[in-house]
Image (cartoon, rainbow, N blue to C red; front, top):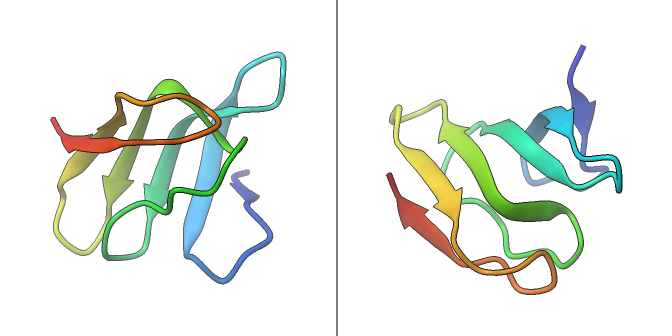
Length: 68
């Protein structure tokens, strides 16, 4: 069962690191949020509305999303 980020951002987290950071998630639509300390570096997020996969190339403190 996926986890919610607790925000109204449509993100559902499927896998986490031992520190609790997301490493695999989906997004209902749009682009992933840049919320600090939610996504690990290298986290993969799939946008369900377009099928586009985003990878966090930034840090957990400041996510930067690139289309993969």
